[in-house]
Length: 446
Image (tube, rainbow, N blue to C red):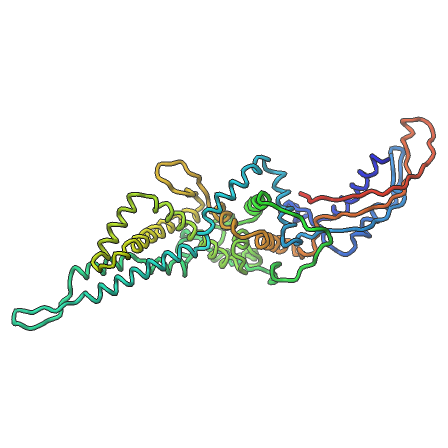
């Protein structure tokens, strides 16, 4: 009895969670039961239900009472409960060796995370712009000079050498480079012939902006491995721009294209209410990321450094402000990086891969558009990413995620009668009662 009955109670506890949302399970691989406030009554009903016994029954609960019932919601612990749930799902479908590589994976991504938001690149561009503008001002002040013509009259003439220098400074396009990042045009990079989804979020109370219900279980601890697993979960379960590639046109925009978000992974990245806003934000971030990668690569390219040094010396050396030379050199490299990043983004949006770090004559990791979005999510943090993924699930299921239970625990006091199959012993067996208390805990489920 002490061996079998805990298993029996565990089975009943799991049956309570068997009332899960089947759509969520089939689409996202998650168990979740809506909190209707009747969980304790439901569990007692299962434990005490009347069923017709047959001779094969080994035991049966005669009387059960649930005590100190606790539960945990998906939104608990600022999204860490959901992170744990998503990580549990991923652990069941990927090799265990991933855990050994997770820390190394996160360390590698953190080395470029400081560039992802663009602030560092924009800071370098600002310095380059200031240097070029200062050089331009000096050049323009020296553009015209006084000369004496054949008749002895003083005339103002333009210095052709200074004019050539001004034209070269203007050709650096550093101001255009700054505007390109700050006011990015997505439509220029979308392959011709494709349209953007007009989908719009149906719920306008995202989880991170509303007051949430709280479960009664103790907080749980998560780690970087589980965070990395949640990144993989987002990538593997959510749809993106590439999943609807070439599906939308002006004449064929159906109801699905307007009602609900199509670009789910982009919503996790951006958090806006429309597909167009989310896609624009995400591609802009990828553009900045590719600019950062290209910039770091160009900064270790001896040939490009020498070319930039020569051009910067020619452009601003005449001013006598030698400290401007390295700044303008950096500006030139940034401009080259921006142009290369535009090419990278066009390739990614066409569904192809580009090298993560494009070193010359070296085998490098090739990433596609979705994998670049996953890189952007590295810096989001547990709360933001968990809540936004839950927003998508809520959008899909039309159920509030702050009411969705993912785990329960508690005590059950039981009085039981049991029968041993007479077909085995061939003799009558008297009924005997056993009083005991068993703990049960339903863990986080796949």
